[in-house]
Amino acid sequence: MSKFKYQNLTGMHDILPTDQVFFKKINKVLEGVSHYYSFDKIETPIVEFAEVFSKAVGTDTDIVGKEMYTFRTKGQDLVCLRPEGTAPVMRSYLEHGMHNLPQPVKLWYVGPFFRYERPQAGRYRQFHQFGFEAVGDKNPSIDSQIIQMSYDVLKELGFKNITIEVNSIGDSECRPYFKKILTSYLKSKKSSLCSDCQRRLKENPLRILDCKEEKCQRVKAGAPQIIDHLCEACHAHFKQVLEFLDELELPYTLNPYLVRGLDYYTKTVFEIIETSETGTSLGTLIGGGRYDNLAKMLGGRDTPGCGSAGGIERIIEVMKAKEEKAGGSKKPEEAKIFLAQLGQMAKMKSMKLFEEFRTAKIPVAESFSKDSLKSQLRAADKMGAKWVLIFGQKEALENFITLRNMETGTKKEITLDKVVEEMKEKLKNNK
Ligand SMILES: [Zn+2]
Ligand SMILES: [Zn+2]
Image 1 (tube, rainbow, N blue to C red):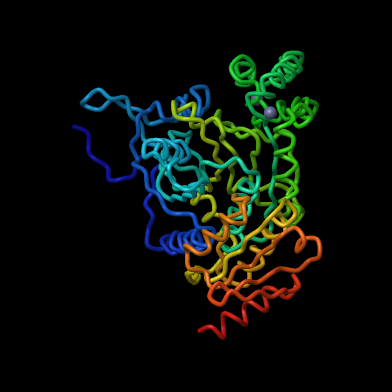
Image 2: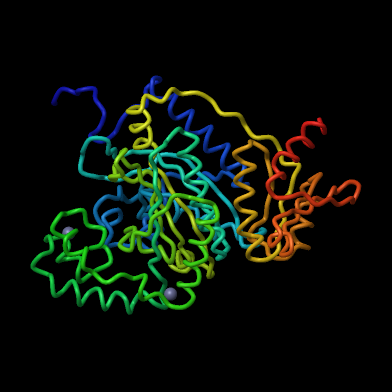
């Protein structure tokens, strides 16, 4: 019998007390941002049926094809250790009939995930991820809210040089045609591709755009762009997402070759990237996108969704490098203010205003995905909001907002640049 040597498995690591402070800090920020945006926590099991991922993520991805910890249980079920978080959340949504709840169902998670990757610095086989998922709503405001929240997490953690890359990868309406054009371009360059990509050419040409090999990057630079081939619906959706991002003044760039390697993505995809002082990319910290086909791929009813996920070890690595001191952030209070909006322009401006309230640490509730004022006021009443800020079409045009006191029924008009200040005063006097 060989002598047992006490050590971790390759790619597994202990989170020692010295690292716990970083986990704690990230958790606090996640709880704060999730609470502010009304995302509720969900925990799914570490072990799932392997099919949850082979159907959703795709068998020809590295994640499922090469890196899954798959095994048979004593009862002969083919199961695996979860390699990612979105498919299990959707599985849970479908299993528990969450379509009966008010939509979108906003969920967040944090926990360990498993991928049998080649061992390399900073890559673990058991790693931790957090994610936000908004399921059941196809409104582009949801996409921008997910991007904003993901960005907020990094900002709250003290990240300064971060940028957002966005793209749209279309849907089942327009992507097949683009795939054809892309394939014929890539076929003409086949000899210049790496061996992995020559194989991908048959299985999934889109993934070639994801390849990090330098020779493939060169081929990519001349490839057709999906953005030029989006169908009307995808184009309109993407245009609105970008308008929201503009309005929120988020620092984004269009990356026409960003695809994200998973089968379930449709329309919007994005990555938040850390950059050096000079602007070169130092790697992705958070990534995500829309997954309107995922529910159907899992055999469920047609359900749109959008989400993001971030790798905690990678974020900690950067935090350590920056020598950020670990500290706490305050848990936000319950919202007494509700922000209601009517019309596209008002919606965009409200999202910006909502963010200003967050920066001022004033809790505000919203329902951006609802279009009717009546249902928004009902939601405000239900949560017991004391004040409702109404942002209608006239208000948006003339840059003011109508404040309604829900207890007395009195109304007041406030110019937009004074709103945050005035509400701050009101909250102070209300205590
Ligand atoms: Zn390649
Ligand atoms: Zn389309």
